[in-house]
Image (cartoon, rainbow, N blue to C red; front, side):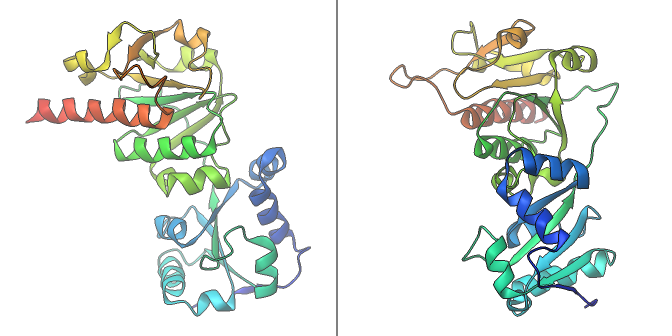
Length: 273
């Protein structure tokens, strides 16, 4: 194993960057923008990024190195990407930094890429319109990646896509997605040339009546947990409803995403068979 860089002070710039990320909010967003790095905490997220050149730094402790699972992951990454920087924090310092007290002591810094949206785009994509819950955003990203979606567009007002909580909920899906943040309605109009389909409780078109229409490229739009899709975006979208029993007011947005995307997957698989 390559030699690790030891850190013992809570005032170390690397530790300050980690703590700011974990604290969240506007300060964390500013730190991520300045460093182009996000913090992924836990062994499962580290394993999800193994072999990637975007896995920029790994942080652990002596106790972490003594754990076979942590040591194996670190050795795998360094063997494939030897430029990855390994930091070793003192155990007492780690306890002041981590949010996962009982988890294996390991974190990673992931490079945040700024992908360009393709000029000619003809596959399904997902648009998140003002979703506030980080758990929902992360779950949607995980579902989207599983359904074969490549591009996620986060409108202004949506939870920060590279926050610790979203990364944790997405369980490694970020690695397989092109994520575009802080888009406006004008951005959508200028760059997305496929039809918009928005879920709406009062829409006239039943999702399960679309049939072969789901074979055509579309931008799936999902709105804020309480307010739904904004009127401005709804105005340029085709409204779709998911049939459900009237005793429940509405579905959780992450559930709605899963239903729509995997109904599309089902139709496409049926068409190919």
